[in-house]
Length: 300
Ligand SMILES: [Cu+2]
Image (cartoon, rainbow, N blue to C red):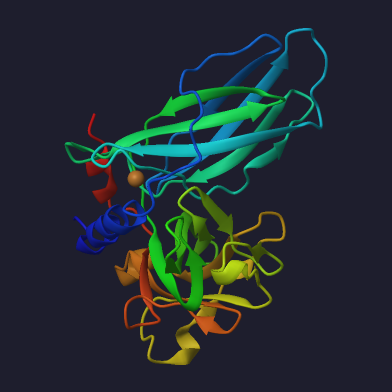
């Protein structure tokens, strides 16, 4: 079964997530080369049905010295085939601390797949910069998907000097059925747009910096609510809990969706007491179960 809802969500993100500013300050050398002092490499886990992949960077100093505790910067980039524009994508972290093996791992939440059906959308790459040296690794992103909600008074500055309602993106990390309680354990990630190249995890204590008139948005209240059915009844809404380990990650439990034959939930997002909107509504649909429809974006 194919989900028409998800097709709409994906198309919306294609048209609007990537149609904005084109001027990027992102002009790194795109060749994967390593200069004298370090071997830097990037590996990615398989991209999930919802466009989530772990990215691991490894730095080896050629003189054998330790790089533990030093910072590496990871920058995602998509070069759009049609427009030639570039944009980034939400990441759990972009400034990472290397461990004793010279490794650090972050998570990418992709806004778009490389291919949609037979149509090439663009080329994804991941850049790692460490101590003045950098490597860019091309990546295939076979699947992507998210739900968008927008600010109302919550506006950001664009590069052309205009403003736009800030966009928030909700990604499905996982939705596992645990048979001991017959509940679907849901894990989500929420990011907010700062610019085409900067997307920040959303959590209480975060400060967004690209507000209108350079005003910061310090997040002091945030609620991500989910409801599976009978959502006119407020008691059927549940507020997801923030992870203590990972910024922007939220989890909750919902009734077994296999039994309810529903692959998506209704969601609401409130930040600093402003309900984010989906057109006229404050409720959006978030796909939680993969029905295989995303694999059509595979291409090869
Ligand atoms: Cu794109």
